[in-house]
Image (cartoon, rainbow, N blue to C red):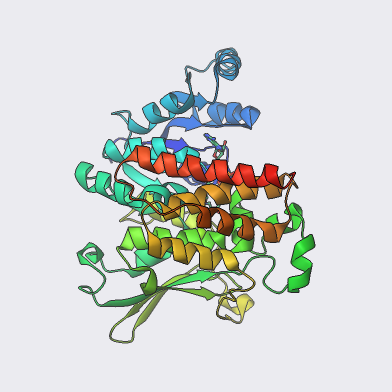
Length: 396
Ligand code: NAD
Ligand code: MG
């Protein structure tokens, strides 16, 4: 057996980060933790360092770094603490690193993920926002460096597993007609529309099938998550938005499907546990144990499907429009959504306002070409400012 692969986990203290470390810990002969990053739950980061003994840990600012460094020394660890985005880019691109789990949430993950892509690393991509914001640049950087991009999002990992090996030749060339992206419909799938005015962040975060971070949980409730995933699928599989159909499947057992021209439809099934796609991507093209229980079809008993209702889920329509507009539109959609979701989580706006604010902001700005990263960040900044302005104009 070769030496263990060196893994950097960006966003180690989050839901995906912790699931990744759980899978890694099951295979010490295969994987070693090279570096971890955390942003807020720093006591947990310390505990993770004690458990996984990384070479580096990254935190957001100097004061925090000093305290963590002292605690690490007191615990007898050699882990060196680095700071901020520069530290994140360093642990993403270090020559000793084999694979990077990109599991920071939101636009904050873009630069470090891109640093890993440019350094030619194997990328385990959970941070869909990075791809949504800068898909063209991201994919181009990957082709240039030879970086292998493996999707962690359960739907995209499912699609990846159902695609032929040579799917990069183009969907038409490999006989794929459509991608069927499944969605649970979230906690508000059946809530009377009039009640959506009054739903709380706690209700939005109580996902029926998956346990996830707060931002993606709200995105799942609004189905903006599926909209971002539609854009993500277009980049990963070189598909047109019209080739990706969203299917509500409340049990979250089928994680997505690929429809071929001969009428075959391939699906990947499993329990809703992110350790499956994480283990799949970590070991690809091999298979390893993930700790996930075997699927019990008898207890599931039935699988249901329905078309998404655009009146209930306006974010899905907004995301599809942004996917079709391309250029700066997805970055603006993503940024407006990040600010609106944060405002909802802080109880500054009501749930239906998430979609209406995003729509207003997108209508204020023309779509422009984004040929370099600066243009992506300026579209992102513009949408954040416009969304903040909306909030202050409405006294929130
Ligand atoms: P989370 O909120 O649980 O964790 C986010 C991580 O990012 C934490 O480690 C946090 O410290 C770090 N972070 C937050 N803000 C940061 C900043 N400004 N700078 C640096 N680090 C920061 O989120 P999660 O549910 O683990 O999701 C992570 C990513 O994976 C998201 O992009 C999400 O869309 C994607 N994803 C998650 C799931 C899931 O099941 N949780 C499924 C598919 C995709
Ligand atoms: Mg998903």
